[in-house]
Length: 244
Image (tube, rainbow, N blue to C red; front, side, top):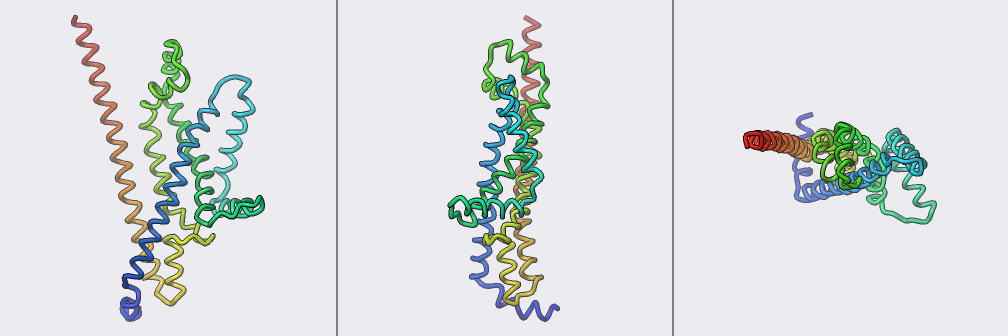
């Protein structure tokens, strides 16, 4: 086996291979980043609509709940082909990359919406009531009162989802998107050992995922530290006020 690896290494370790894998890495990151960022924005507004009180908004709330529950239970590979064939059926000739991005948007919107909803619900109801007593609008309450307290609950699972989807984006290779797994399959199909081709893919997924995981840890720690310092500042201000 090692003789085979050594004999194939000069053929595999070329600048052309480096360029091909680099292109695949960029495609993987772009696809995941576009889908998850747009999905995060859509998820935020979906949660706003889903939690809007009043009977007049009941049909809208039910629609948002149905969207989340449906797309959280559809496998990504099935969704890829569903978006592809539906878009073709209604006359859109999207590229495979665009189809993958649209599919990720649907899926990430559904999953991140639940993360954001859980984060907002972690803030005590008294905070909403206090903002309402001060005549804050719903958007103002979210921006200035609720979200600063909810980020510590939202950020860790949202980053974990993003890192997970970098790996799950490998399923887009079944559609024809030239990302890391597709390049690994290509080199394996032309006779390069699976250890070399898919071993390289494994290492590159780690190279992409680990720094993002560390970034998520840093953001979580930064938010926690900021809230701790803010709480200490409030205590000092209250103590100074009581001494006056």
